[in-house]
Length: 114
Length: 112
Image 1 (cartoon, one colour):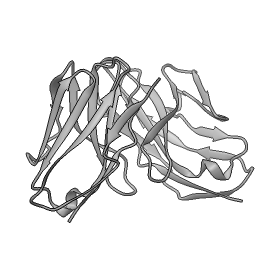
Image 2 (image 1 turned 120 degrees about the vertical axis):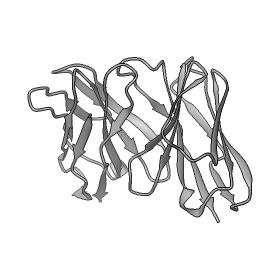
Image 3 (image 1 turned 30 degrees about the vertical axis):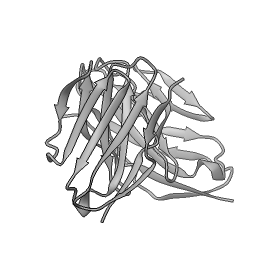
Image 4 (image 1 turned 45 degrees about the horizontal axis):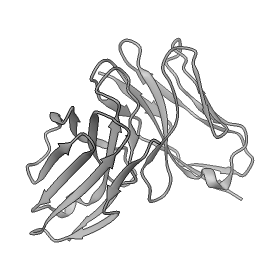
């Protein structure tokens, strides 16, 4: 089973709202990732967690706040977003942050900020 | 740094045509190479991968061979179907702890 699940599938929020995206995997992977994908572009890395610790933050604005409560779960908390943050948010996981590990992606959450 | 270049398209083919999507890379060391496919409204799915030179990855009729001498990983399929219409991303994963590097993606449209 190489499944990564993400909820919700779609999300519409105002600029003053607080919402959270959720990602889950049960493959025993110890590295998890958040990506942002704009239309007709490749995914852009936002955050990397390795063994539940944040190891990379690619200069993402503080209105995005990641959390890794345990090895299977990854959350992305959203607050005071801007319309330009509208995008597809993808979660991925890999066995570890090792050498040339395959990343497995979830279906994504399509976010619209009004 | 590492980089991936691929033809951006869009590529439009008739059903049963032969498909080639070119991908070349720049990397130090010995990266692993991947092709991911993204169907409309969905996330990325791993299509195939190769971890060392001369490896051939294959899946669902798609093939790609890791060519170190030409730093290429071209995707091929002998006979495309309408259901293959999607965006295809070439990607590499380099040394320990290095991030994935994606190409810009190639949009494929297959007409009946």
